[in-house]
Image 1 (spheres, rainbow, N blue to C red):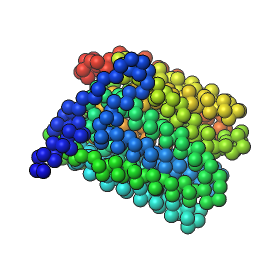
Image 2 (tube, helix red, strand yellow):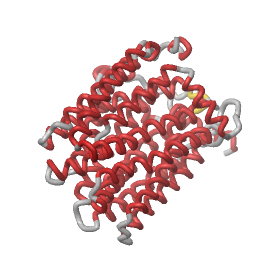
Image 3 (cartoon, rainbow, N blue to C red):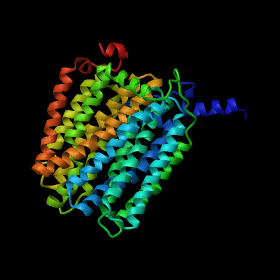
Image 4 (tube, rainbow, N blue to C red):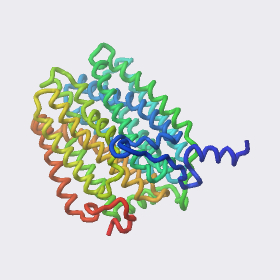
Length: 442
């Protein structure tokens, strides 16, 4: 088979025709069209492998995300040092997220995604090594977390920019919902498994080992992607290209607000740095259900998400979802029954799934392809960095005022701030997904 023929076959499987997308998925009908999760993007081979590989790997990554703060708390007995896990993870996310997004616009996104994923996997092996050697050294753990966060930021920037190239534009909301739902399913299973493992002898060893093994499936999915070369004007890589991406956002109120409301939601209302302390003080050390609860709600919302793609006023929907998240988190901080706390956190998780889909969809459909890598770089900084800053805020506030005030006060502050911001920025409040970007910002 000739080179052009092989390329045509790869494009047909991926849904690509040069820089465009031509794949058409069959329509759905009846009850499923209105209520159940839209699975049509799974008919596209590369996307299906990405969802399955990432979903499986996410179970392992959640084991590590639980094991690291629990190990740090076990070694230090300090929620402030648990909060530092978020800080050291955030700084590389900013630098490498922005840089990785710029790189994704000038190189083959498949290659960038694969190499950065391998590097992130090696950092997981490093966490396993420090646990097996019994180093009991918090700075070593923080260093490995920082390096892993940097490589994760690059991989995520490339992966997010890949999605609009392998699925039709009308299925982007459904594709994002599938990715978030499968990822959240991993967020349910991972913490529940971690809750069992980390309470046993050599539990940290087991958690990091399972993460390393499961991540190989994500590497396989990345390896099977077709080539995804850059499109557009082929801008030179450098600080100027990063600045161009930021300038593109700043000039568009809809994009600015989509990032701002997420920052407010995660920095003010993310309570996970408090889970080890609250579990020890109220729930007899049952930390696993707390880490799983938000994801449980997200999975349930995702499975009944057929309506999400039909909402036109996505700015209003995004604002309402984050206000709901903040209020649910605030109430969960007052609960003294673990199952009530889990229920309220799950309600918050359902709202978070809805807001996540709209944030990602607005970004992916708003920007031209030659800007999507840089847009995803900023997205990674905000979405992955926000919770890490939230960990720092929650831990520091708890050290000064107590866990309850830190948790509940943050949720209430989030709901109030997002509602005010949404109402004040009229282009965002009026944003209609069916209108072109220029009209949407007017």
